[in-house]
Amino acid sequence: MGRPPTMKKPATIRDVAREANVSIAAVSYALNGGGTIGEEVRARVRETAQRLGYRPNRSAQAVRTGKSMTLGLVVPDLNNPYYPALAQSFERAARQAGYTVVLIDTSGHVDEEVQGIRHLEQHGVEGIVWCQTAGPDEVMSSDYSVPIVIIGTPSLNVDNVTTKDYEGGQLLGRHLVEMGHRRIGMLTAASVLPSKDDRRLGFIDALEGEANAVWEEKAPFAIDLPEPILAALQRRDVSAVMCGNDLIAIGVLRAARQLGIAVPAELSVVGFDDIPWASIVEPELTTVRQPVSEMAAVALTLLLDRIAEPNRAVRHFRVGVELMKRQSVAEAPVSWGWRKIGRS
Image 1 (cartoon, rainbow, N blue to C red):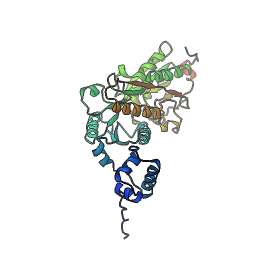
Image 2 (cartoon, rainbow, N blue to C red):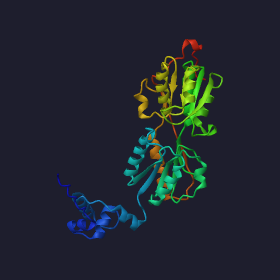
Image 3 (cartoon, helix red, strand yellow):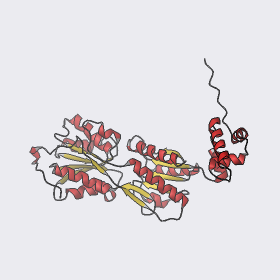
Image 4 (tube, helix red, strand yellow):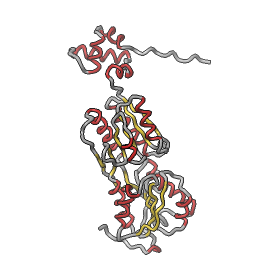
């Protein structure tokens, strides 16, 4: 059996000072941008630190400065491709700003979201971005020791960023109407109150006077669909189905194949989010794209601003969405009394 590799002892700030022939204070000034040392010394210290592979001890810095340079991110389910994409975008943006990100995945358990925040507080993060699915009262009912920014659930009293979900719902509704669909099923989020579900509200408003929502079922954000939804699809009494997110829509595509329903010839399907899977499933999914990178960048900006100015006014941002027309939508079958109309 081979011997394990010998671990190289990390270079210390003393090693850099000795090699560069300067004081420890000069090394600290050179690497942290402070002090009154000359540019020649600053450049020599940085070159020496790079050559020796010196990495600052973040724990020691945290003790000295009171800043951990660490942020928390709470997401509900990394099995949903939307959240890994968002986490990756947030981590990259935070790293560029000099921060490390600690991730909490609550695995779909709403009651673990606040527990996750408490865990991050105990680990000394400076602020938290929370992709919230718990009720909005959870934000107000607890006293948190660090700044928090919410993604996805508007809150009047906490910095938050979300997409223009109402507009996205309208885009989906208008598209289906323009394609001649008059009898439509709805699979909306089980975790969101109907009165707070902007995707649902925008979609219904777009149908008014043009098409009917024949039935509505509540669905978890998952591919596996409950029996009542499978029964609704099996009735074949609609020509299109609007889904609260792409995972539900992909579940409908799979269920339709199992039930012998042709998509889009017999049933058109639309989703929301534009996760990476949306463009590789068969047929490719018509959906609403959320700008994940922009949302992550805005959330980071809001959080860093709040850390710098704890008493500033609360800010709310809504980022735009885009309809992605793909193969899962077709003109309504003639047997449904199809007639194409213009957008009002």
